[in-house]
Length: 316
Ligand code: NCD
Image (cartoon, rainbow, N blue to C red; front, side, top):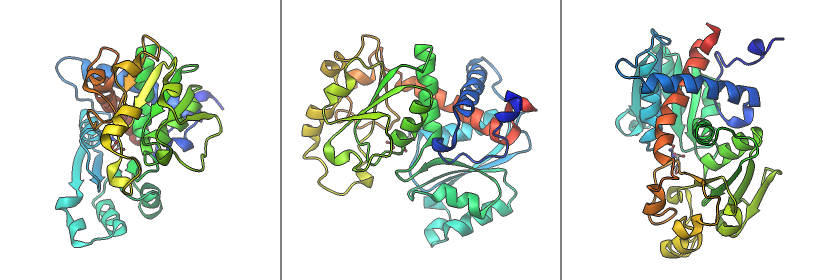
C-alpha cells in the first residue's frame, strides 16, 4: 500500500487523539500549514473545497475560541455553517441528545462539530447518526483539535517536535486538553512531564511514558515548552485546593518560575485564562508566549480537519 492510500481521513469522525496514528497527525499538520497561508493571505480567504457541504456546530458547553474557529474554518472552506447554542435551542425544552442529533441529521448535514459535558458524548453520536462527528470537547475526556493545534504551534516555533521536553501544569485530572495533549505529544516523540496539586493529578495514570511531579519546579526545569492549564472549577468538587492565592503561589506560572525553563521556552495556554491564578499577566504577554498564535493556528488546524474528513484533502 502506498503512503497516500494508508493515510486518509475522508469520512472519518474525529473523537480522540488516541485513535490517530503518527502519520495521520503529520497529515493534519501538513494540511494546516497550507490552510494557515490561506488565512494570512490578504484579500479573499474563501476556498471552494467544501462548497455545497453543510456543517452544524452543536455546543452544550460554553466556548469562544473553539466554536468561533470551527465556524470560520468551515466558512473559509466554502461550507454552510450553522451554530446551535444549547441555551437557545429545544435542548432547554428537554430534548435528548439522540433526538437533537437525529433532527440535525435529517436536515442533510455533512458534519456535526460537538461539545458536551459528558465523556463519550461524541462517540455516542457516531453510533446514532451518519454525518462525520468532530469532537470539540467531551467532559474531561478529549479535545483532539486543541491537541493538534498545540502541536502545530510548537512545531511552527521550534521547527520540530520529537525530542522536545514539554511540561503540562495544573488541573490535569479534569482537563480534556491534558489528556489529548499527552496522547498527541507522546505519539510524536516529545518528552512529557506533568505537575499539579496532588488532588488534581489522576490517581490511576493511564500513560506509562510520562513523568508526573508534585513540584512544578521539577517539571519545568529545562523545559522547551510549558503548557499551562485552566483550573476547571466547573468540573471540580469543592476543596480540591486550599485557596486561589495559595494555588498561584505554589503552582502558578510567573516570571520567577519561567527562569527554571530554557531561555527560549514557549508558553502555551488553551484559554480561557484565570489570570493571576494559573498564569501571571506578565507571562501571558511576554515574548515567549505563543498563546495568541494558538488562536490563529486553531482556525488553520480546524480547516485541515474539516477539509480532510469531508473532502479528503489533497486526495481530490
Ligand atoms: C479548553 C476546553 O474547553 O477544554 N478551552 C478551549 O477549548 N480553548 C480548555 C478550558 O476550558 O480550560
